[in-house]
Length: 183
Image (tube, rainbow, N blue to C red):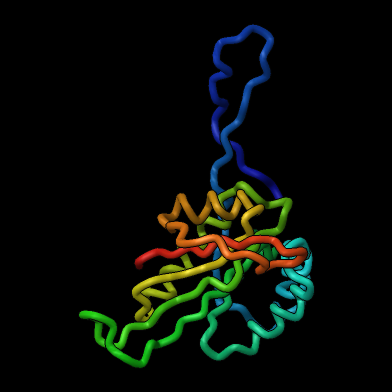
């Protein structure tokens, strides 16, 4: 696997300073999850969510069985590098001027730690929003750990707003931030 680098950035003109590189987003395809993705999904969940969940692998197995969830996998050079899980539910009633809208909840988004900061999370999130819109969702909500600043930055940059902090959501009493976005 190779990381593509953009042109050298200016080093600020300081003598002796090393040139810095800007990374271009990694090319990746996003596709619906298949049965043969289960081991990858469970293993990556266990790895990246272990600081937040007692049984992240079990949580992923439950998401795999949820009929209203759509799971997508990101690949680069035929290697799985991330996933996103979005659950879309119809409200079953009118909501203000909206006729029986659906709402989406981002259940999980993860990228292999060695592939972070290459634009994969951004692409997966945009894909989840497109899936939700295609299924009639008018909004998307999510929870993220108060300590997960990388995820918060991703969500805030995508237009999510923090609604409220929630105490004791994750292991060891960690707080979560409830976030929301109109689609």
